[in-house]
Length: 386
Image 1: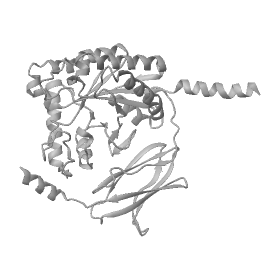
Image 2: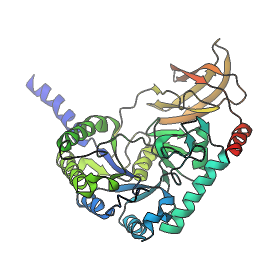
Image 3: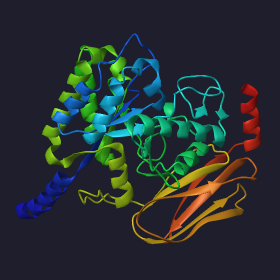
Image 4: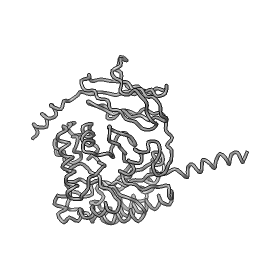
């Protein structure tokens, strides 16, 4: 009896010991227009992370590089240096100002007036940002972080057309959020108002989240937003906190923790499908049909699903009466994550159903198509604000 139990327990312990965690540190908005809080530079934070074997993905607002607070060029030189040491530059919009309402909490989609900026506007912002990053830093980024995570499908199309491969935003994760654009959603932020009073509470919460949600997802993206203009950075609390967090993670996970940049982690999941490229750990894949994103949508949305094995997939869309509208997929698929775009141009607003069948097993979902706003209407609305 004891031997049988021992033979059962040992493989389980061995399997758990082999579970890896990809850990990504994403730092957004590394310089603010609030010049009363000039940053002390990114180097102290970077050095604390490097000392523990970590990497940083800097989500840079390109226009910041030519604004008044960076006339010294110190930030530019530090960013050039950080890339040479294995860290990453991700593009974070263009200037973080909405062309419609001048709000600073969003840019690519106006969430205050529910306005979809047309393709030409979003594309222009993206290309201006790319030009600035290339001219200032010599970098052509492959990953993108949307300001305020306010987005529509036009944004996805613009990013793909400008050769971005990876996104870190809301929506489906470890999956294609749009054909050609792979999304790795961030998890949590802990340092927004970090003080000595809440230091240990925030640290304990972060460790708990990483050990639970991180191990469940096989990765964890910790987010720091505007850290260098906050008092917690000026007095060293943020740097010390991050160092202590990484020390705890290294002690807990040992060589099972893999520090990655955003693009490295997203590429590992994208290319491996059902395993992590450098670890060989298999995910416990199940047959799963995800909620379409965005939902409600207009006029297109992404339907994602997970297949545990290769086989034949049939994906169809139906109206409320059960009438078949369109077949989106009918053919062989591999095991892993898959995404299909559904374009509802010309269709009536209302509720629709999508049904997926793989190897005889069927799952269904419901989605809502809102009123479709034409590109001409969007351009007209935009021109009237100028």
